[in-house]
Length: 112
Length: 112
Image 1 (cartoon, each protein chain N blue to C red):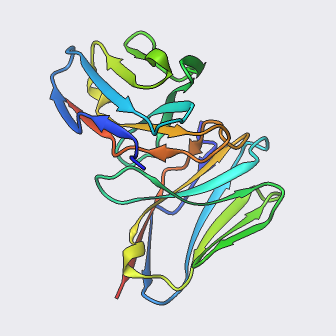
Image 2: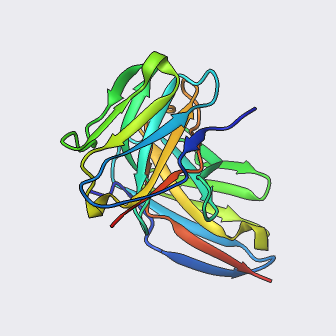
């Protein structure tokens, strides 16, 4: 069974530029999550989707971050404009209803 | 506001001995607890979980203990192996399948 796919693995941008990350969850998983992991900290939830609807986006900085999950499958997370403090690993995870989370390898963002 | 706390950033154990990783939580609504293991440049992988109706769950070399009155859980690995060297994250949610709140992680080093 294929795991959660994320791209790109690494991205370096300058502050005020924009960036987008893509996630393809495990087939059949209804729930998709985006987490932000800053160096030395645990993953922090940014947004949770159930199919193509948003369940929780209370910790998403909506002035600069946006996410969508078209057709309830793939998802994209966008940052515009990026700030220095957005440097982190962005982790996508998916789960079947009521099950454990399966994580992708993450997308490492460096903002200069 | 860190609801899941791992107060030991690192732990070093000799091969063959027991590793004990600790985790405390503050939210009494949490009723599902998990441990994830993370190697460098990879996403976290699920290790073991426990629901609040139990006080112990065992899977091979890994055992998780839950003390609800103390809001404390621990992961025991016995015997420890060099391949167990990784960062271990404690996580909790209010229901199975809901978004996870993570601790900052404990880096375990198992020496030969």
